[in-house]
Image 1 (spheres, rainbow, N blue to C red):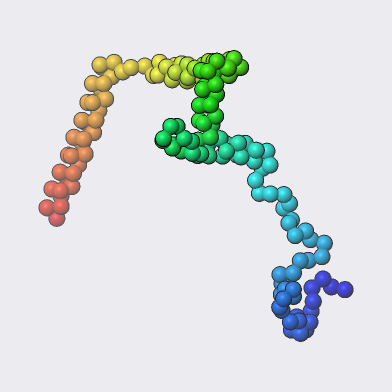
Image 2 (cartoon, one colour; image 1 turned 60 degrees about the vertical axis):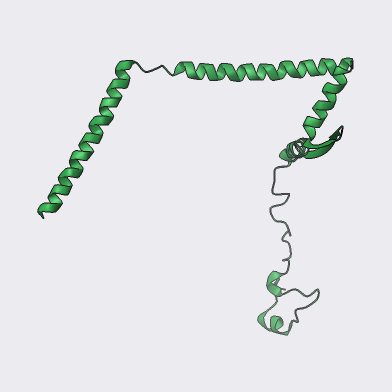
Amino acid sequence: MSEQPTESQCRDYEVGYRKPPVHSRFRKGQSGNPRGGSRRAKGRRLEEIILKEAFRPIRIREGDHIERIPTIEAILRGLFTHAAKGNGPAQRFSIEMLRASQQVLVAQALAEAKQNASERPLSEFEVARRIAFILDKVAREQTTLETIHQQGRKV
């Protein structure tokens, strides 16, 4: 028996509730989700959720003032508040976080300084040579434009 109904069967077939058109029915032996799985990589979902939640704005009250800040900032404020009140583990963790962030900043500054050091400054002679080159180029273009303009008058 064939999988698709014949033309005569299609004409007699009534489309309606729970009776889809023949061309849009599921075919036997073919999956309804041929590619399978979701479109996103499953490994990235957790990281995306963590970042989304860490930077989701929340409202906090400080005295009479209400602020909207990212969740991670509220957590860090709480951590530093506990550390300032004398909580030993919070103090140790805060100090370690500060050291780590300072090391990252120092590494970035060193990388930037190294990149800037590799670019040698131009000597006065090199600067003068480049200025002369640009002035010469502009003069040539101006001469060319004047020549074209004069030829246009003669014709």
